[in-house]
Every structure is written in C-alpha cells, then in structure tokens.
Length: 147
Image (cartoon, rainbow, N blue to C red; front, side):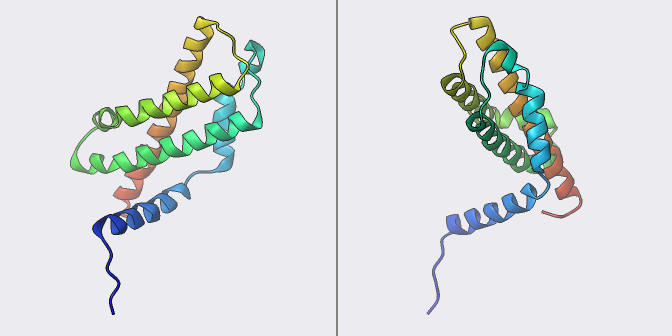
C-alpha cells in the first residue's frame, strides 16, 4: 500500500529542508550584535529593551533572513537585488510593522511621534539588513550549487 502525498506537502517539506540548510549560515552572535547595533541606544531614550523584545527581534531577523534567501532564487533568473526586493515588499513591510508594533506595545515608549518615526526607520533598516544578508547568502548557495 502506497502513501499518497500531495504536491503542497512535498513543497512544504522541500521548503523546510532548504530553510534548515540556510539557517546554518546564521550565528547567534550575529543576531545579538545586530540587535545592539540597531536598538542598543534605545535605553537612553526610554525604551527598556528586555529579553522579550530581544527575542522578538531575533524572530523577525530569522524571518527576514529566510525571506531574502527565498527570494534569492530570482537572482539566478537575472533579476537584481532591488527587483527581487520589490517582489517581496509586502512581506518585508509586514515584518517591519510587526517588529515596530511589538516594540511599541512591550517597550516603554511614550507618545513622542518623532521618536516613533525614528524607531520605525530603525525597524525598517533592521529588517532590510537581514533581508539583504539572506538574499546574499541564498544567492551564494545557489551559485555554489548548495541549495
């Protein structure tokens, strides 16, 4: 008796396998350093950066990294990084909004609109930097035929 599998199950299994392979290229130290680089100075302004917020940043970083890595397949079709980034702009904006709203909710930020705008741009830069790193690592893996 054969087990019947659907195409979606196969695609999901293949995606999980690829995600596991690409995540080997990511180190915890890099995650910690990037959080400090983008959000380390927020203690002065008033946001208490707790362990919960750091873990949320790690989660968003991993998602952005995987998003960039998944969209790196378009580089092998001749698209530039910017063209592929435009394809994923909705997902990237969703990750940015998620991180921004999470920090606003759990942080001790007030109603200072200038600070909130600055925080949003930092979140956008943070997600963008992880997307780019994922794109570059994914593209490198495809060029080396490690995918």
